[in-house]
Image 1 (cartoon, helix red, strand yellow):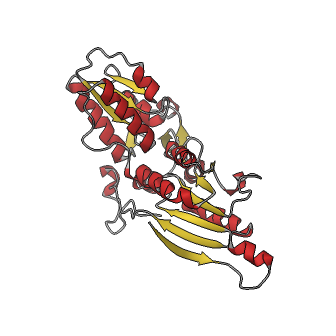
Image 2: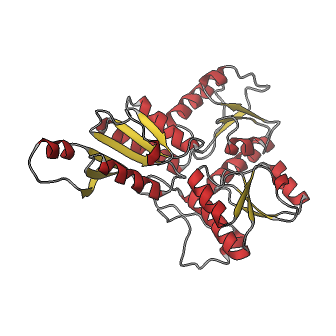
Length: 342
């Protein structure tokens, strides 16, 4: 881990107030914020609005962040919970979390013009589910019930798939053929919790098959590793992200398991008295769907509260890009690749 000083507003004047200020520090974690899948999904909506004009219907929140959703709504996107809320023949975007085959069939039946913004890493899990189901495996999906991503994945093989969320769920499993079992995971889970669940699955079903490569996405992993690395250096962690963001909630849990208090905030307005009491060093990160401007506004607020020193802790460099859906890619100049926006 390298710590790179980004800025310092410490005063050189003497006195106890100056000394206290110089002792209050912000550690800004990197990587943080938007991942390539989120950038791609947001770009899909913006480009579709530019190409076709409003209204563009989006099934579910395009990503789990209320600021992103509101910005796109103001630009002309109409967010709906189900396809039935969109007029027949309308142009509809599927969110980054993916959808089940049943939703795709409904779109065809209602002659909807679909643009698919599903994250490629979620699509990978869907394809793995189809492959295991065709081979006759019972698939154990590790994930959180009712999360949009999990709902879509379960729909790929509903008769062959069971959902578990913790080790206790694994202990309760009764499968028709314990010799032919596989597992997959939601992409935004806690690394440690998932390892515990997989370990127990392997104990109960020694012949269990897993995905060829880890399903938990690179951004989820990198942000959790950054939190683990910095937790010993701070007295509190502030995570910028919405309450319905799975990957953001996992960052809070990872920090708390390290023994350091952590708080999930939509923005700076949600800081409450007591969160930073006796905290001289506070760390900041952001979930994979949280805009960077919210992080910068939080930093400005903390500076006004005496946190005059700012350092960046870079754990791992990220350089991941995803191409746009084919039906949009032809309209976008090649000089502007997707997946690089901060």
